[in-house]
Image (cartoon, rainbow, N blue to C red; front, side, top):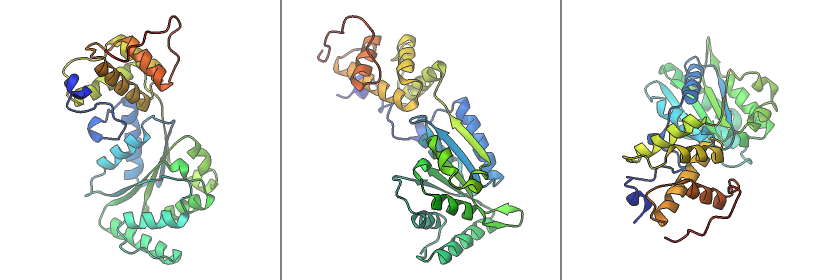
Length: 284
């Protein structure tokens, strides 16, 4: 038996793997999406979303990609996985995402291919959008210069491409490596942690999507989870997932504060409340 079966859930509700079915549309995200859609539809060129670790940047990037209908947009999501990315790699990836079948090795030819691809998209009355997740890992001045060069690709009265960069706050500093690029940021959004009320609504939402028909976490437990997570979605997921697992292993129908304290202590996310140590409860 799994904890899903024990708590009568269809699936795990607190996975940290992005899944659009679990997307929780809080007011902050609604505002950010509206700003980004404005940047895209007005072809502003460059928009930036920054936030601390675990605040939902990747989730939001994927949600934006879902919203960009193929009939109106030629969109792509690039995920930067290491800081040694080269300008050549970036240009080739963008070319392939824009439909260039055989990107050239020679840079001048490659840029011409990208321009022709963007022209075709524009002539088809669609807007080209490239979302870049983990953009804070782009740390080379030469890469920032390439972004600026691509933003120079225009037709009369219209830019041909919009970039939306998602990253940690250090992305702001990276952009200043090329000041003309930093000055082209048309829209900037900052993601912050959840309030206590949003944390509780978020937990309830994910449980409901996973098939829960009863409230597994009471108000006091959710308040404590908010304190230990700092309202960071990734940490909320981690704590809740481990509390469910621990409750299952101990065959506990009621998920109480003591379970939360034990889980948080094991994860190293915060000190256990002062006082006598809890007795070992690792086995039911």
